[in-house]
Length: 289
Length: 338
Image (cartoon, rainbow over all chains, first blue to last red):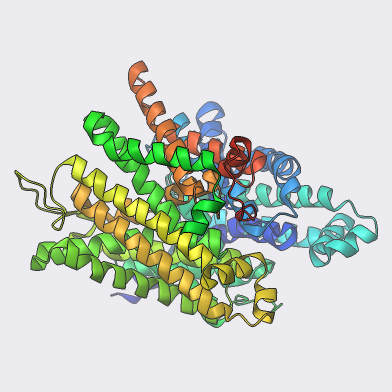
């Protein structure tokens, strides 16, 4: 196998992986703070992908611009979902919350199926087939832009959590639920805010992802699992971990597709998950509790 | 047994007797369609009961139960097709294979302290991993499917699992009844009480000297072994197996919906849940056929909505509430739902 091909595939996997990373970042933020496993994450991702498709079909809106209204709408959606449905379940057993979100996920996938049918859709932007080369390496323009956008958004979120008062308050809620309540933080409001931010991440990631792959409603559960794998591999609650996990999974998927068959690629991701759960359950960059 | 009957309200005993008579005589007056729905209900009731052993009794959430159904189905089917081994023998290989798979997952998870949601994800990971593996396993047809030869027969042969729909109905009825009796008995043994202790508070159970590792393992292995029977039944009832279908995550979710809606941890919950879901889902399918609608996903949206409504409004499932209303509650069993 020519080395250049392997290098090109690896690079493409890395760039896709950064978009995966942004998706997983949303999940990581939600789990890290609210401690609710958002089992509808991939389904939200597919909804965002369809939103980008619809916006493009209706207004010729480029996904890189559609990203902003979609992310904003997802923020509101996430806020309402947490405030309205999940907050009353915060003190309930883990599996009850889990199944609550699972029910929402089932409705989402099949709602999309009812609305759009099972056929794959994509967005035919004019620069879809453009690429540029660095030496022997060939890079798809969309992939590079999508990866850069993903990194920029992730960086923005990181700065928000690090330096703003709201970001600090959210981190306080994550570190110590009771303590945050004692000092007078409205924890449930911050939970809703966090869920909104996580949803906005996945909304943006969906707009970027639809540039790289065709979307069908049934992608949802697969993306949910992928997001969980990435977050667990990278380390729950670690923001750089989500990006690192995304890149690792992106590369492993790309190489598995090259050396074996594309249909076997998620097998490698699952194998990676099982290995990490067994030997480093806190994830690569996670802290041990 | 006597004590069990004495502790059950009269009304419940009468209802159970009526139910038993109806179930036993059903093939005599039901048409082919009703019978096929009844088989489906019993199938999901049985699987729900099996899943309930792990989650309802012992508190270990499995979201990958299609793994055991699939392995059970494939092992018996492969032994039958490739070596001519009849299902009554092959089923033991299926049970062993499922127990081994359950034990493998259990050892990995419980030895390494993977619990709660992580455990659930691990079960999904294993089921998906196996699904993709079987997709590429040409010995049993790969993703193209694995087909069992069907021959016209004059008589029913229960041991070979070949015969009329009525025979399959009675086989599934017997399995469901056996699972019900088995679970009733399990809950009253020392093991059952240990499981419930672990479900309520694993740390406290451990502190009381219960070997939680051993009993959690036992729950997984028992549940997996029970699921194998359903898998073998599936293989010989439908005569075709596709990894995409039998191992899929949506199949696992279908398995757990019944007990969740009926009442996790209760004995009647899985059965009631299977009845409610199957009848409603089939009703919707029929209704759509009447109106000539062909929209994919309607049934699942309905499933999801049911699940949502039950979780929000009846967090313990339908059965505990219904039983209280009807005055059927077991005098000893008032606290099974956690």
